[in-house]
Image (cartoon, rainbow, N blue to C red; front, side, top):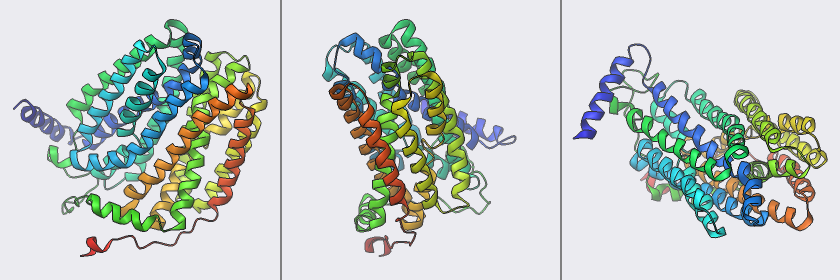
Length: 433
């Protein structure tokens, strides 16, 4: 009964609001806030790493292993969360994801053993951020928008960049003032507070508030039912037989390894090894987020005009060059220069990669196929997060890790040129029938 009254109240509010602007923009605001906070949580391990290492005395490789588990589970959760969102709606999954994230961060205050770290930073945080990860934004955009869908997807990418820009220096300030344990509790409470606007304002579909999608004509057809799990698996059985799927997965594996995995986890720790203060290093990461904001929006614009394969070759080549230079950065100015170069293509690879998925496998199969390509991205991220810590503990620095990362980035750029753009026939016979 309470839910019905609340739904009626929101519907009335949405109809009244639609006289000035469409309620879809309110949904965008709530979703962007959720994505922003999710990115803040995903950035936290890189901020906390040095302080946690000093507090507990644990090996950096062991801490990085817990982070890698979280990155891996985030990737696996992508395809699963897409199916759950189709079945239960974005609103319910956002509430569940934020609650899990909140629990994982608040309970981090009580960490005393390494398996606690694996459970909280690895399993729970990975599940929570995976639920509200890469699939949420495109799903909301396609449900609520006919016009400006790509623009809205770009806004969600910008929200992820803003999360890095806002939370990294803020969390570092907290860590240096009150410690990483209290900082993790504060982050968990922020995630919990975010459930309030999601519960009150978020709705699954325009029909829930008596509206059509933004930009839809009066005769806009009803939403097409999502593919069944069997149909999705039929699509993937065909996709894995294509060399394009494996080339896209391999290049995106490298993207995850060189971005979220190595740099996202170890950059601040690398700076600390060279005597750069954690506050200055966090500022460089925030600068990277700012450049990421610019690079992602520009990449989306370029992808509409130029061959995405050539763009990927350029992006990965520039990334490799910046990684070759990073081991020799020993001061704040050099770190800032790296942040600018690397930040411009941190997630600029996403628009051309999704465009190539659509070109090869069809736009209606993007969710299914890209979900598994993104899983490869997170496998790469998890591998690099852990192996970067192993290299640091074994060799005393990150030199080998950065040189290997630069090499595979250049290789990924060359592989990108081999990706075809010929549409594949992926509609299983059961769907045709």
